[in-house]
Length: 113
Length: 113
Image (cartoon, rainbow over all chains, first blue to last red; front, top):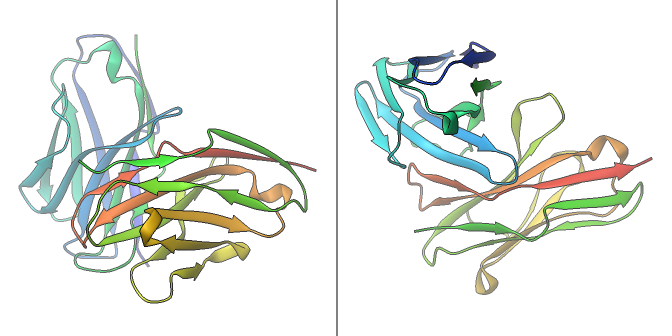
């Protein structure tokens, strides 16, 4: 069966520090991968998605970037965190070309101080 | 750009009451529609989805949703809620099997025992 992992589960970082959040999927190949930020009362905001290794589409220009170095690995990064980057970050995957919805990871709670 | 609105930010019901959560989207083309649920402390998970065919779709745990194309709506219903339905509910739209998923802001449902 397929599983999705995210780490770390929680993270507290100072303003200006770098960020690296990792997401990995097991049990499937060539998934579509997504990064979302979830803010209270604002739902999920799609940040990036990827349909293959090295292919990244950005939905919202901001202080973050994403990379997909391997088929089932999706990384969210920042060179210098801002206070406004605080939030709950969710990774999701979908079977390429399928009509199923997305499967979500457990999320990472990021607090920037 | 697509947008998804959910009518209520927070709904409070007593057990056995009927539930209807509103969802409207803005895209005029072919869409795929989803309802996700996030129980306290758990991952987001798919409740039900609509791709084609019968506009009344049934999901897990007695939930159903009706796609009304003329109203750009996909409202979620349950005839009799239980305390265990307490959760946050998100409506989402996917444009014609594309990669982008747009989520609504969510509706928090509190069911009183």
